[in-house]
Length: 186
Image (cartoon, rainbow, N blue to C red; front, side):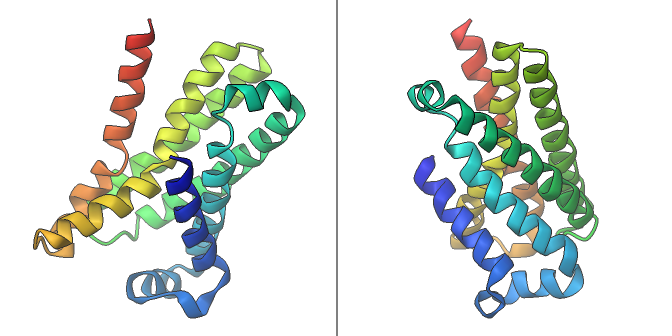
């Protein structure tokens, strides 16, 4: 997870800060919705890194101040990336199914992160952790999207047909796995 998050984070930050590296789809997105696209890339890139570092219990215990600081960075990044993502959802390729899939992802990403933040303020650590796992499962939608898309294209499914399905496959299975882990741990 850490290596995939670092890789996709580097890609997202490069798309935000290095215009010369942007190719077809990303270049079109930035030209159509420049502010939202750049905020989504930068916010998402930061969140992928900040969140990936939070899952090591020994590290969290050894460096609690850094954990809290990175948690605040994560919440801020989700706020920026999520609002921008919601705006981008209205302009997503793939029609209504893709727009709804990405829009719901953005809304649930913001809500789950907000609930995680709320619960840590109330010192309810277990519930905070569960909401953070859900939030990061949705964050990892950036990674799983980049797994599904080439698989669909290699199978010969045209982008226009693949993208609406990927708008859901990128994050729903991640949440299902997170909930399954919660159920098994009970």
